[in-house]
Image (cartoon, rainbow, N blue to C red; front, side, top):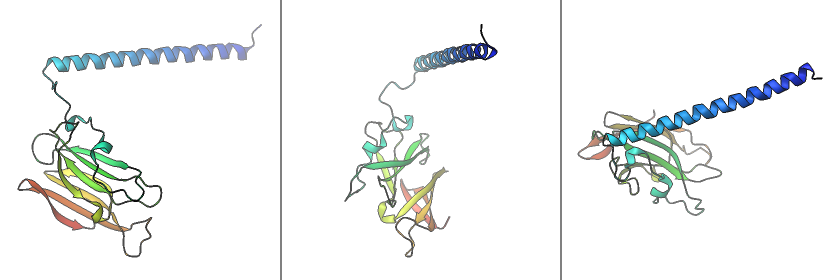
Length: 187
């Protein structure tokens, strides 16, 4: 003879099994819907060539190779990627900021801009806006009307290497086909 507790356990197991089956059905429907949308998009003439940077198919750790991470080279880590039309071209370009892999004190960051129309397998770098010589830890990047705002921290002469405290902000605008730093101030 079953106790009330045994009955509840059996019902609970059936409920969990039913929920799992229901979730699997919903997941299958979502996936099948995605496939249908992709084939429909291709029918309407979507790009069939190699993916572009603006399509977000880039492993940025293999692209940013000019960051000097010596003497303890553990590689490059990507701290952020932002897409936006920073040149007024109608295509989202990629802004990528990175630093060297570190386990203790942070390394200064590098911020690069890549052409959104270029091939994702070989992105075209348009500019390095912030380099390690700027001694900046990037906290935020924003894209405006053909401008880029970068806010972060720098080391004050009294700061320990772990903890930069001086707030700094840069504004870059597009002038004569290149990016120009127009402002450097505390944000």
